[in-house]
Length: 447
Image (cartoon, rainbow, N blue to C red):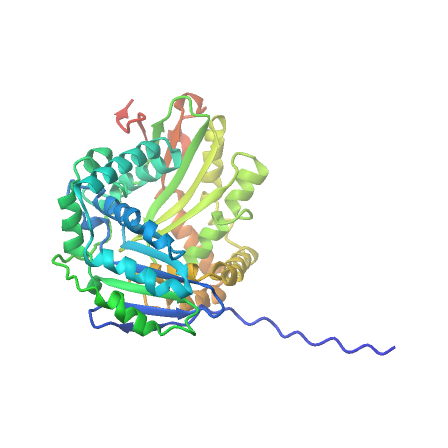
């Protein structure tokens, strides 16, 4: 019996980020369109040049309450069209994210445009937003992870830098926010001339330019305030900070520093280094602290781009009695990098994981729109993600090893420990991460 020959399977071609089309509407709104054939939902993201530093001094939380009021106002009207809305401010921009079935895109975008054109902000809505923010702040104070992130921002950035303070403000600053503050924030910073709209989906049956002209293209607000440029944060002497949480069964550990952001040529190598050290279950830190010692369920790498810098580091939770041992192992792995450099296998595995998971990670219009929105917020060209993938494919192990040593040398890292000091068996002064200081649960210095 003759069997047909097995067909030859060609090698898989390198995945490329979807192409985009860019234009500017008559009202000054920049638009980026990305076609995703066969997708039944569309994603619209607005990147507004209204970062947290746009808030009035002493009124941290204004942008958060503004965004929460927007979503509360239009969530129900959007639900009639099967759409959902998110809005939040960050250190680089204010973001509005809309997802909707493609046939309802025009109606959903119209609902959003109406609110942006004339936001129905009232005293009652503002009071409700303030109360909601106060409840959220209470929950944040109970989260060791969030408290560690607040502490590292306060430690690494100057007090007069908005990046040093919680995104949603503190209960003290949020309590003073009124409707007039929300309206002033809107009038000063929210307009089409300061906004980039990213739209991803299957638009074969839709005239997208016409849709945008008749919705967001009719948004006519003009901002009255310009933001000054952002300068890199001054570097502070790294130290170890223990924040007391009496009775805590676990310690929250956060190692971090300020480093280069996505504009720097080292970002690609730095990203692979981060992945090799703590970006997956097979990373060095995970193998040591999770697989070998059983001190933690896992380690999370942090690489958060900011306007002029990036926050780089690792975070994990460990059993309280294992805190000292875990810190020693963290130090040993990072201090040993010059001798035990990132290997060819480690670098290749990290690159294969990042590049191999990209087709799945960017399968939905939302994921594509969010990635493009992030690059827009960081003032990067639309082709940046394609360029980054090409860089990841060609990086050598030596380049990754050099980036790892430069970015994550222990003497350059600040260590935050949230835990019960009575359960930490050895002094943190001996940890090797710099001078140790102690704060109580209210972040007040003691001892």
